[in-house]
Image (cartoon, rainbow over the protein chains, first blue to last red):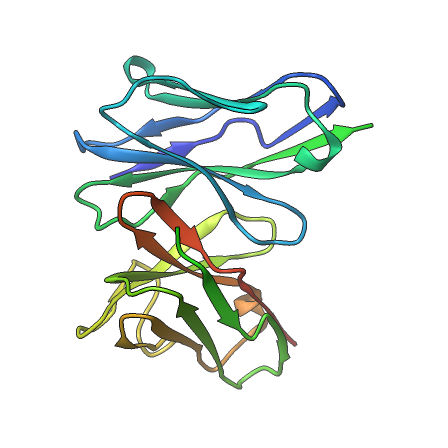
Length: 115
Length: 113
């Protein structure tokens, strides 16, 4: 069975602060993919990143960065210099190679960035 | 990536009626998925729809309640049957785009009165 845990249900920061969203996962698959999605108030689900289990390199994309630690089964997401437009619910998700590409989602973290 | 559209974008329905949601993809894909997001909750997979075969339903979801069609490689429908207020949710279709990731449609917001 697969499981994704996002322990932080809500985070509130002031604009320009850095913020890290935690994601811990469980899977028996040796090959799997990890994802982060953003869901702004409008409701659509915006794809942010996919990470293969064999690639533990951290990734940076503008103000976004991701830290994949296989040893601790974590895939954390950091937003640097947060902005009000970053306010959204962020979901971490897992897809195992043997799960037919279906996604198991974490509970989501609601990020509120205040001006 | 894949561009996905859904119809309708939102609807308000009466208890006991049925609603069919359409999902259209701009490229041919083998696997399509239907998810439900209840208010304030995360996403839960309803079923996987492969072209040419019956949909595979997750625990807690049955074909009589959520019949799915997959007539070709770019289109699928999900019907929410005999609706009750508990069916009020966002319904999202998604596809796996080989080599890149899993993408979601804009969702259908359903309110059942």
